[in-house]
Length: 375
Image 1 (cartoon, helix red, strand yellow):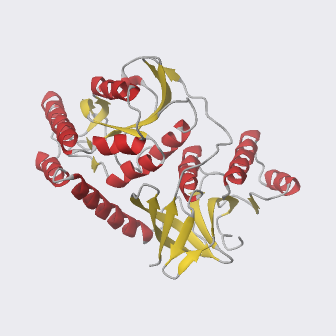
Image 2 (tube, helix red, strand yellow):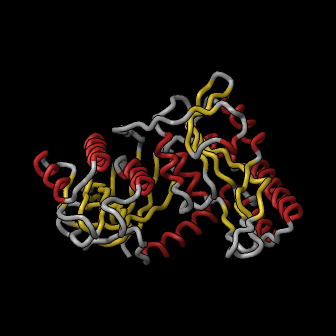
Image 3 (cartoon, one colour):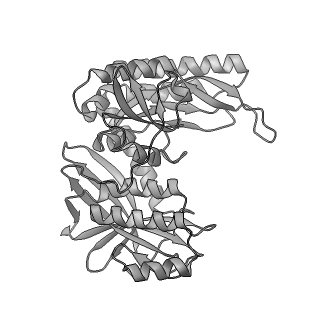
């Protein structure tokens, strides 16, 4: 399978529409929204929360996207280091490439841990499951307090969170938290030796942690590259892996949904829906975060050398008729809207996406999922 490599010198991106986030002044992190502005000690932060370290849960990229260029000041994202749903559920672990990606976007990561939860007694659920997991709010607030006086880059902050002493503290707290939850709720959790194994591996040294997570990321990436996801409607191109090196020498791995090679390499991030005219807004924002990255690639290479390229966000549905692009005329847009009976909200969304694409030099393609090849 073909692999691409790219370099990014800096991140520059303009959002066509900035979401108004709610203002949170309560110091209980667990009642904050998934994305919000937080006032603390006369400082304002844009904050997003992940429900799991796994990136495919609850659209965390969409939440991060909404906090970029919103409240002013530092941008923070809070990620649990592990999430154990109980023996009847999943067990997720933090990955290095998540930290790397947030560093590239200059997002400060607060790695946190769960220490409270409720038993999941809903009918039809598997036994030994917990729900409504809650973070140690006091710990998160203490890290925000540190950020009040921290003046180095997000990269330096994030690397500091991955130092041996801090990781050991976090994992011990997570282990203790789940032991207490298990005893209190009489729910059997995953074998703690699994956490211990993870802990032993990542505490060898920071570089070992990076290597472990990158290997896992690459394995997941390779699996993903062989699988067409339900929300992707691929066209006539090819799924490729891409290794991106940022201006600070960090490397992370992504999969490009679909690369169409014509006059240039079109890097397609595809979002598909079977049920509506357009994919869900969170799904679209997830794709926009990829455009944040792809549109800032300064040089793209194959094994043969540098190539011209263009990132494209592709939105597809079986229910659509025709297609539009970022350079479509007003007449074409109007005809497309009428033909597909778009409401005012859908029209506004498409116009905003086109504006954002033109401001940041990436493409927008909205079409019936079976078209694809007519770039």
